[in-house]
Length: 235
Image (cartoon, rainbow, N blue to C red):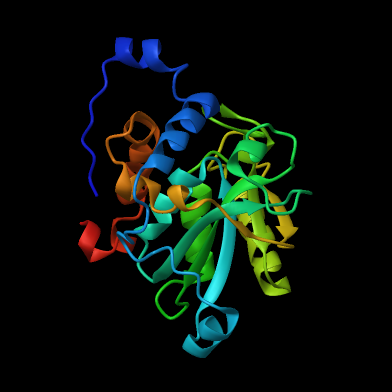
C-alpha cells in the first residue's frame, strides 16, 4: 500500500503538535460511530491456541508506539495470518483505550501476531519490528509520549526470549542505531484485545490525519526496507 503524500516543511512544522495522543484519542473516539463489523482484511481473527497449534503457527507480541502503526506494518508481512491490536504489560484488568491513555495503567499499546513460521521466522518479525520504530527512546515514539508507547518485546517462550536478547545484542553491536536500544524484553502475562474500532484501523481510515502523517509513513518505511516481505496484494 504505497502512500505518496508529500508534505511541505512548513506544513510539518505547523502540524507537528497535532498528531499526538490527545488528537489520536479524539479521532479514535469518533470511529465508535462507524460500522466496525466489516472485516476488511480478515486480519483481526482471534484464533484459539488450539487452532494455532493445529496449523503449526505461532504467536508474537510487540509494542512499538501506537498500535495503529505496528498493526498496519505487520498486516503486510508475508506469512502473517492475523494481527490484533491490544494492551499488555499493565496492572489493570480489561483496560480501555481511555484508561491506557491516562498513562496510569502501565499498559503498552501492542499487537498480537499469529504467523506461519514456514513462511516467516520469528527472527524476521524481530527485524521488521526493530527497524520500523525507534527502539532507542524511552516511553516515546515521535510526538506520542507516555508509558503506553514504550518499546517492548513480550516473549511467549524461553526460545523467543533468547532470540530477542540475541537480536538486540547484535543490533546494538552493529551500530545500526547511534543510541543504545532500550526495548524491554519481558514475558507475556496477559494480552487484552483493544476495542473493535482500533482493529484494522489504517485499512479502514487511510485518510484520517494521523494515518496520513504518521501510520502511512511507517508503512512506507517497511515497504522500502523489506520489499521482499510485502504480501503481493500490497505491492
